[in-house]
Length: 401
Image 1 (spheres, rainbow, N blue to C red):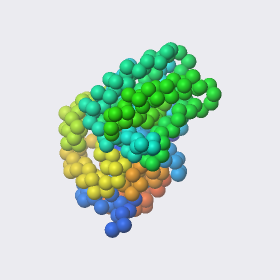
Image 2: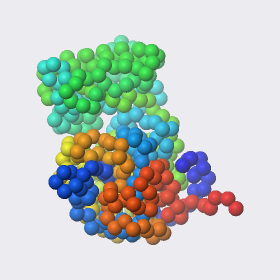
Image 3: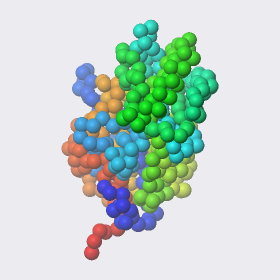
Image 4: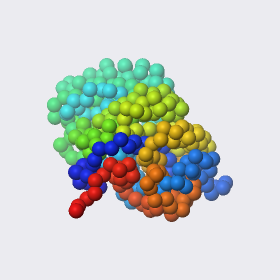
């Protein structure tokens, strides 16, 4: 849906919308009982929402396209992710509150483990502690390269931020992260020869980092991805007339919310903490984005059972959410992360839209096979979810005479 078109129809209202984003929620069946993580979960409250709401599967970017976290979230937020492209580096910078300048180049980094033959054995270095990450970032920030200012900042666990500041730099570089083990890190490479200077600088940084980290097992190497520069995106209030707030624990998702002008609410690290933060701030905002990360991380770790437990933990918080009397609730994810695959996938994402004004379908449980027959359809574009939420919240004027 075109943002300029929607903006003309937006009207003021006192209604409230909650977007509950279970990151990587979609899954694939396991062999033992042919159930996905959602289908294997005991979720009476989410099933109740599905029974009273309208369900379906959304496509984050396009059919067959595996989305990154940035594009996946932007699509659900109502922004065409092929038009508004935001790199992970920019999101990481905004997420930790780094003062990113217009021409800075930012990249999201992973501390990783490489073996004697230079091949990646663990892309996340055993998920080292944030404290250890901070020690290593302090070492890397001492790297000097003529003509460029270097910033290396801790994000969380194995993740860090690299920012290059200087004249004539470009964010049009490919990732050095191969996103698989058993292969060597990729060499820096630009989209065209125009990026040659930036490629040389990045390669110099990586080689110096490799020497510095040589004895820091398991974090003895780095992988870089999401090279990018700060884009120009209209805010949530400009686009949808919503005073919005974000409840998220991971810096990247806080960064994305900050980019769209959402107020970042301070919260604890647990799922219960996030819902408590929602209740505490309920009277102050029209729109709440609640981000649940462990569904994704457990999927990436191939831990089917842990993903089930996270889903069940979220389910227990639904009665408290409904007690706040929201006008519209969306429950979905930014993409699928099947434990079977241990990574993001192209599979459409289960979705519920609940309100007192929605037209219920015949879906009685929240799962992939149930949602495929729901009223939203098996492949609704993610960008259509927010307009539907606005309509259910009576925040859109009639179009035409």
